[in-house]
Image 1 (tube, rainbow, N blue to C red):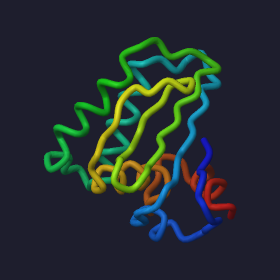
Image 2 (tube, rainbow, N blue to C red):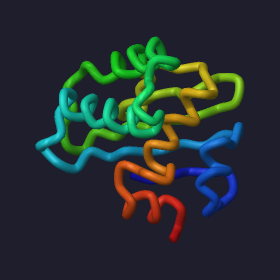
Image 3 (cartoon, one colour):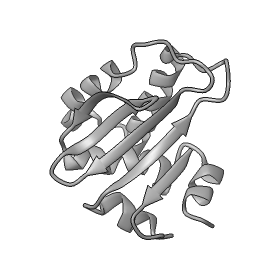
Length: 130
């Protein structure tokens, strides 16, 4: 995974809460990753990022998960690109899968990777350049 910002930052909270263009790129490297376990890990991350209460964003979460119904294989690249006023645009290998136009969803999604209890602490630190 990689984090792309307009200006380098190590401040996770500022990035999570920032309303400026940014993206997270996820490159699939393992053949053990498929759409089922990819969506399961997203579910876990979203739940963790929201303290177990995903109800406020349930419709956006369902829409987001629907973007990942196609086959996932090693070499696939997912880009989650946030643009103010446009929302979080999800791409697979450059093709747009859909958009979630909700700033609160963007914050929760970035919190999966950059929050105080991230999916992967090593990845968090690498994304923040620590």
